[in-house]
Image (cartoon, rainbow, N blue to C red; front, side):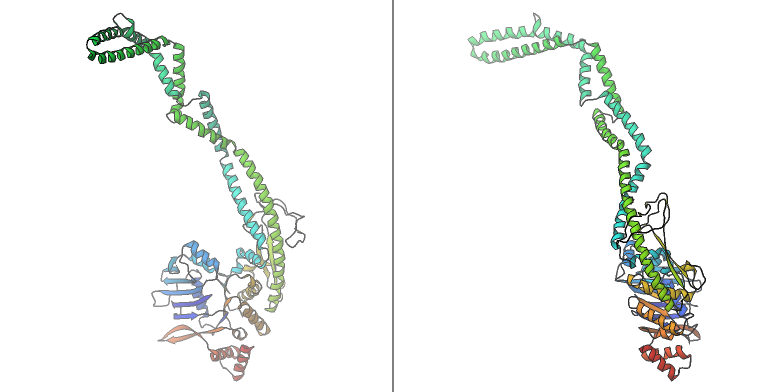
Length: 580
């Protein structure tokens, strides 16, 4: 609810503050007293652009501030969090106007007019001008129908399928957009894998071959050197082994004379054994040396192949083997994209079928609810002095060759097990987040006029009564909690005025209403009654507003009944209206 409205230095207003109550707040005053100025100030905190002459003459800055209780308005709290504003049970909207500049604040933080409008769209409707009437915005018509219906489970199921289908469609789009790229990648990987498989490298193969090549390239040198070493150690008459054996024998002879030579004799025996073993090993090695030019050429070619792979795939044989493994895994993935696309297409087909069924069931439910609303609104409009008005809710769909929604199932059933009967459809239909439907309110205000969109058919007074009728019907669906009706009494009187007052009183049970009126029948229903007056202070005209007590209310209503001269009869009638 709107708790308070503070205005300073705006138009004729020097300074005023109004504290509104719950229920029905009535504002009265003579024509030209400044009620429209009050509405103008309210529009500023609804995000409307300021007029250049809005600043009070001589003032440097105008301020308009509204304080709303939003504890129970979840949508407002969600927007505050989303937009990054401080969250509390109160919403404070403020506009500051200077000569050539305007600033907006939400909970004392700088804000844009778009952010301000987004918030106030959820909490306040101003009827009488078209700028802030949610019922004139077609985007809000469908949620109003759904709020009146009893098919939340269908809407919830539809939302889940819609989100699932959106994810599948995005996945399909991504794969299709990458199809050419994936095919090229698959061809490249196929070539690279084939190239590596053609060589078929083995772990540590390069190092082993390098060692073998080194031996084969130096076979002659190895043979001649090892033979020479062998001869020096063992094979020749002057070999080292012969010298060592001779020295050992002499030491053994000396040991028989002097035992101290036993240890040198033993050590030189060990040397002999070592020379003997080394000599045999070298002899065996030299005899095994292979002179094989064909093998050497084969190794050189193999090393060339391995070296080429290394240069292309990472610089080392380990990198080649790693790339081989990973590219094989990737090739498996990119080779399966056609299968993935097919599987996704199958899932999309199944989800579209589910979405289609849910969408048309919801559409049938909406038609039933719309029919009920049409009847009730027509009844209210008759009570409100518009007996020739015709109200119609049009539910339509947009054909779209790429749409997710198929044709309705002629054998389908609605939630209440009634057979679904649809007009003939063709092709496919565009899916929305809440179904296949778009909803628009149409009206013919007078006999003989064609039905036209609600926003284009009514005068200011008619608009207020139409909004009152719609709000009365839609009240149980919640919606915007604060309703402002400006000059709702235009063109009505007598018994219709009583009907208007009764409708306002019923609506005020679930909504806060702020009503500017000239009708005593409406004013008498007030929970809180305010009077706007012009007054002259220090040779300057200013506007003031005050909350009336019971005696002042009676006088004000009597004035509305009889004019400036308040008679006893008028006061008696005023009391009777208040007590009625």
